[in-house]
Image 1: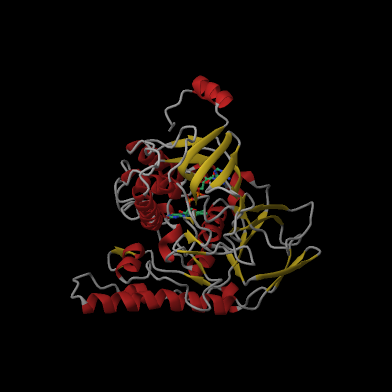
Image 2: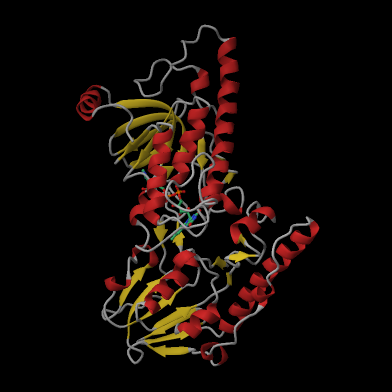
Length: 459
Ligand SMILES: Cc1cc2nc3c(=O)[nH]c(=O)nc-3n(C[C@H](O)[C@H](O)[C@H](O)COP(=O)(O)OP(=O)(O)OC[C@H]3O[C@@H](n4cnc5c(N)ncnc54)[C@H](O)[C@@H]3O)c2cc1C
């Protein structure tokens, strides 16, 4: 995707024009940036999307080789395009997801410039808007939409041992079993990433220890409907706040091998050794919390509660969905659950690798505006920042549970576009009353002229 400016001409322009003026600058061309661009295009807001790498780069290079979407293709997509080569009930591969977004951006000719990193955003002093420094020059923007992803910086907890003999990687850097040295593996974290990686390694012949914390584990499907559908009709995707006490609860789902329910007991019967939360390392010995049984029991509760809610919904609405009593059968407890391991000597156990599937943090070092609380968390309402003109998109729970997911971000982007349009209308009203203002520009990608108030972000 280009902005239509050919490279040699762009270089010439750059020599002559140091600063580019734009109404709205979107940072990041993952699904969030593309959704934002679509909605801004629909309402005619001049904008530009800057992406430091390629479109949907994280789906291309920030995921392991065998990853497929966690939701079926009919669900994990934007409303205005289907996956061309994936069965609607199937699960798109990470490459198919990336290709989908490239094609989606082409569909409405999204103004995206790739290979441009935003390095600094500051609010202007003495005049309106923001100055944006990038690897390809400076921009003046009335508004900036931050669409740099919910999962930016892989987090490895401080307890990680400092050991030369161990290979330690974050799940963001895991690609395939062959990448790891010979030997057994500890996988820390049993959300969707940890559980899928542990499964893959075990199937590749590794002995795997999977450290399981608190988790939700919805059924892949129940009564002929995928859990994405159930969460939708039950209003769970639209939940606006995390339930108290659920802040550290991860969700364990998998679309791998055609999709299946994550069942820790089955994984253990298959050969994976389950252990509790990883507590500490001392020399070659790792200690686990005595919480495995509890974590598994709560995961079961969560699983069964969704079946209950689904059954109640089916009765209430008279849905003729086939009953599925066998979904309530919980397999027998495996040995590692009956008699859990609390300590493991990594050398004796032949462990040569640790994979930290321990989540991500955000990194807004480049965004030097008054949009954060004292802990550095973005302060916003449905993505509209407390710093007027700054918007956040794609963050977990931005407006609801679905916000960081493919289908959810599209709706959040619509809300933000709406907010931007409303602000522009207020300012246009002011301009109309001041007929001496300059005529409005058609496109933002030009040298700034005298700007009308409607093109500014007033705070
Ligand atoms: C392993 C994994 C599997 C997932 N599976 C699913 C799934 O199946 N279904 C689903 O709905 N969701 C899934 N998600 C959640 C979510 O959909 C993805 O994380 C998705 O990539 C988020 O899209 P985004 O556009 O918000 O952010 P990203 O995809 O992270 O895109 C942000 C973009 O911003 C760019 N960028 C960052 N900083 C700058 C800068 N300073 N200047 C310029 N560009 C910058 C990055 O290069 C990147 O391309 C998954 C997440 C993970 C980690």
